[in-house]
Amino acid sequence: MSDPSSTRSIAELTRRYIEACNERRIDDLDHYFRPEFVSHLRVGDVAGLDRFKAMLLHTYDAFPDVWWTPVETIEAPDRCTIRYYFEGTHLGHFMGVPPSHRRVHIDACEVMHIRDGWVLEIWNYADMLGMAAQLNADNPLALRG
Image (cartoon, rainbow, N blue to C red):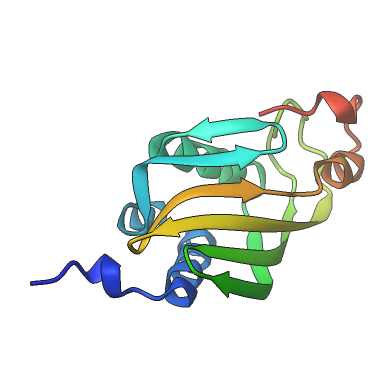
């Protein structure tokens, strides 16, 4: 029997990733991401799927209504770029910033490295300065995970 991950399309993989995040089904990421997965963020790398899931839980705590909306997907062999926006209401501490109770809208894109139907790495280019400004952070350049 063949490995179902090898026949999974890049479009299907990226769609399921966004759906899992939006529906708070982070354990579903085990089916799409390798355990040694690395997310390269503007504020530093998150190495390992367990750490990535912990980061998502922190995001859900800070923005209980967070939602990622894909705008555009560009596919290439072993790569996918997703342009999206992130919206949510800041009701919990996030990256050192106390709750502002503000609604935020953040534009971002992710370049995903995919091999044999598995996500190995993501390079995330989120507008962290825009987020810091919307959260009214005291020192936006010091915003860290």
